[in-house]
Structures are given as C-alpha cells and as structure tokens.
Length: 353
Image (cartoon, rainbow, N blue to C red; front, side, top):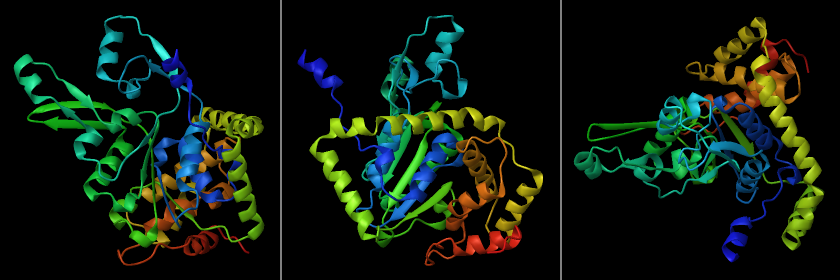
C-alpha cells in the first residue's frame, strides 16, 4: 500500500503559465514542442533566471503520450519512425500490442555522463556466446518522444554534444561495437542551457541548434517582487497554488495540441521564402540551416496562432531566435543580441520604423 502511494506521489512542478517574463525562452520552447524538427534550443543567460524551472515546467505542461507497455524506447503503436525493432516485429507477426499512457519523458543529462551512458551499450559476451543482441538502452532511448535537457551544455564534452545533435537531427541513435550494430528511434526536443560567463560553445556546434534564446535578469522591481511572491506562494502550499493555475495550464495545453495538428497544413508563400533566404545571405550565414529553421519556426508560430498561412509578422517574431547564433565566424566573438538580424530583416522586407 505504501509503495503504491509512493508511486502515485509526484514532486510538484512550478506551472509554465505562472512564469513571469522570459518571453523569448518560453516562445522558443513552445515552438520546438509544436515542431521538434526545428532542432532544439540553446538558452544562455545569467544564473538564477529560471532556465531549469521553465524547461521542467514545459515538460509537465504537455499531455500524456501513448506508448507500447514495457518498451524501453517509448515506442509509438503505429508510427514506424517512433518504433523500436521488437515492436515492429511483434506487429508484423500479428501479436497483440498492449499500450499505456505516460507523462512526456524529461531526461536530464549529467555533465559527467559517458558515451555508453548516453547511447547505450551492447553486451558483446552475450552476443558472441549466445548469438543474442543484448542491448542496454541509454539516455537517448529514454528521451525518445520527450525532452532531453543538458544543463551547462557549454561545459559538456564536444564529442557528446555532437552525438546529441546528430540524434536530435536524424531522430535515430546507432550503436556499433565489434561489428554489431543496433539502431533505435531517438526523436526528442534537445534543450541546452548555460551561463556565457563559463564559456561559449564552438560556432560549429552552436549552428546545429535550431534556436538560441537569450535571457537576462529581470530589472523591473515590480516584476521582481511578483516573481518572489509567486515562488513563495508555490513553496508554501504547492497543491492549492497549482489548482489556481489549472485552467490556464489546460488552455495552453489545448493550444499547443491544436497547433501540432494544424502544422502540416500551414503554408508559406514563395516570395516570403525568397526573402528569408535573402536575409540569411546578407547576414553571411554559412550553410542552409538558417533558412530551413526559419521556415519551420515561422510555420510553427503561425500554427501556434491558429493560422494556416505565414505572415511577415510571424517571420519577424522568430527570425532573431533562428539566426543570431549563426553570425559568429570567430570563436572569440560574442553572440549578436539580435539588432543586426532585425536591421537586415527590415531592409529586405522594406519595413520602415
């Protein structure tokens, strides 16, 4: 009985809709939830600005997902891209599939994690003696269909950051040891956070994050008092306080789900796509990731607002998030605050202040 009660007990999570300010970070997270193919978000800012709180809050806000019961990869019951090999074989053999609903997986990646802990390991001895591909899933398997959060990503080993970005971009994780290869789905929203004072990521790695959100300590005294009061009330009586935000949480949850459904039908005019590429070209952005991410994010933002056509206003709202971290050529340069992106955008789209 006690064990069951403990299983039911969940640590209260500060509600997403109660977070004061930090609109840039909140928007970037919501757009990545609507379209995970945007490629994740890196959040850089001062200490104690609510980065970790906000990321845990968005995971808690999202609706439960249906997974195949007992599957280590949180496999989808019908989508082949989100399904492990064992589940695929079971479906092909006509075996019954039992499912259950779970909260969106929220996986924290510790700084000291090894490659085996992240990707998973193959039991070579078992494979050679018994001919069985014995695979011990890692954090990437656990994060499939959820959120993978790396705090202090700028302090993580570059090789591990590369692995995370590869998996986030392809949606698959491949583990190869001694000629044995295992592949499993690993589609997740990658969220990295860090304090720029402790060092920046290399430009090559920065470019592979879909969005870059900058957050600063709130300066307005009234807003600061509001933040302190909200947090104090939450700590005093979490259950009662969470109840007061239930309707706002549900409204935002419904909005995000509706946006996910609307996204496939959202269109962006050809002339707007050309102008997005013109902005990228004038800013001397290397490669085409900037163009692709800006197009995706603009569609996600239009869907978020319940529209099936992208407007210039949609592009303006998200373009700084998508391009500011792609302007650095020299690792010693600081990341642009967004002024350069805004200026070039207004010139290309012929907008007068």
